Amino acid sequence: MTAEAITEADIHLIQRIIPHRYPFLMIDRVVGIVRDKGCVGIKNVTFNEPHFTGHFPAKPIMPGVLVVEAMAQAAAVLVGISMDVVGRDLLTYFLSIDACRFRRMVVPGDVLELHMT
Image (cartoon, rainbow, N blue to C red; front, side, top):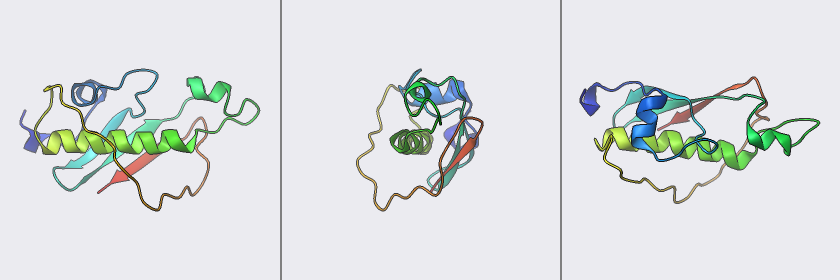
């Protein structure tokens, strides 16, 4: 399948594009991929993720820095598909973020949608 034809990435395709693995792979799927334009990363937030044992035990909240990491991973998948480097062992680096704001807490049971443009 050519990069132009890819509109969705399951966990297998994601792992062919980015090097992250458990426990640091923060996305489960990428949908709505439009090459060079945007996509939506999907993260199914579950209680058994390692950061919830300490952040915070009585009220588990996904750390904001991990939400940002999930965004970066979804963007890296978009870059990998846009540049047609699937399976080529190349790295995409996250360099900066401007004006990041969190609108609400991310807790177990949430489905986090990460909209990239």
